Image 1 (cartoon, one colour):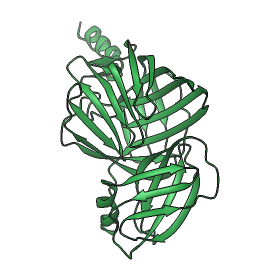
Image 2: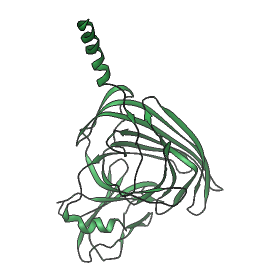
Image 3: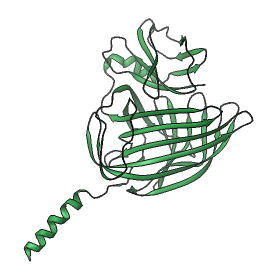
Image 4: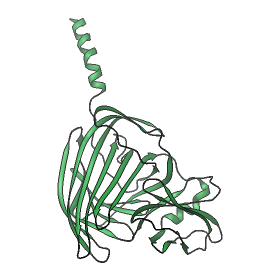
Length: 323
């Protein structure tokens, strides 16, 4: 009888070891969280399905971006500053949704919130919702859309920094149709998000934006959670980045910061594919800085990187939207 029992146990062990993970706290943020993402070269998300191994060890680092979680006013209860772009979230026991986004040059509002992920979530779970949207940059642009999430895979995730077992991948598709008297846009935001039980935030993400209509756009970005932090050499950059404001248009780049006057810094501008489109070294004036890009850049989101020119430390980065 014992032989039968042990044979049954031996058969069950592989099944137990590879049981699909259940995430109770994905995107369940709390005030005071602070962490970093390393943005890197874009990459394909890889296959869906059970017991996958997603290996991203060959990704090349581009820029270190700080994330800070704070309070927010209703209808949101959490704000999340990702390199200067602020996401307003409604986090509750059944789901996390986006109520708005502040991109410095424009804001987006969603009613009801645009679904991000349900709680709890496990392999093959799906959820959807519909919403109306309003872009408040003048002129105001109303829209409608849908959000759909599907937990499409689980397995082992390998980033350039660590290996994470029992991870769950969620595919999030956020589709919007925005229209006004002068423009009509169809935009799909497609994200692949990897979660594990030890972190509330995605430990790896691949995001793409595909827009058709008056302003066609295609952008892809990838980022992974990192325990790296800026070194003491960029202390001034780190403190300035929290209050930095940037404006990018066909006339060039304008940057308002509190960088140390007379100190040299290196500025870089990367598109969301990780390509450097502008780089320069400048002496800070202590206030408004203007840079002539000398080229026409497509409309879209860019990463503005600030660092010290000796290259002894990683850059801190904020997002800027090219109008």
